[in-house]
Image 1 (cartoon, rainbow, N blue to C red):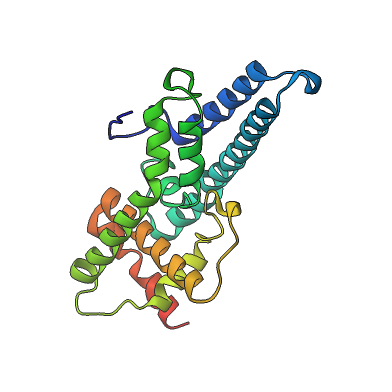
Image 2 (tube, rainbow, N blue to C red):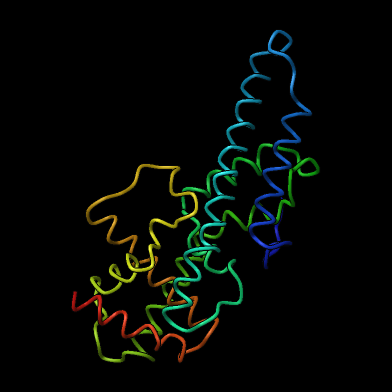
Length: 219
């Protein structure tokens, strides 16, 4: 299969909900009573049921990002995002990449619950987040705070202030990190959100975050 690049065919929350509904539909179509199932069919049904459950969790977590995390950031920096999808993409945990890849390979293309391109796009969100983190880091250093070291402490504190790590979509799919790994993830998340703010709102929107970074550095 080959896939195009670009936005999802529908808003992120709607696409996830459609995926969950499609998986439930496929489960019903393939369902057979236990006494009539082969071992292979039983494994297949368990797999689809597991995918459906995990996507349902993503739907709930994406809704929390739109209803809680995004408004909190907007209030603090005075910038209105274009919509919830940008932040949701940033907060999509890398562990979800395997989930979307498995669903994509689990059906013939004409039987997929949603468009193949949408599933491929979901799987690429973690890479998009790292790209935005780089944009946020470079822009902060060159255009907003030239010559100053933002520091890991300020970025991690900003992540905590906005509850970014706790708001990750798909965060329950793996064991939560700790120590240095956790701090690195927090820094990357904060940089990615700063990159999103810059891409959507420009340098002025990013400058509004500086007092919050200073607060984090000063404890």
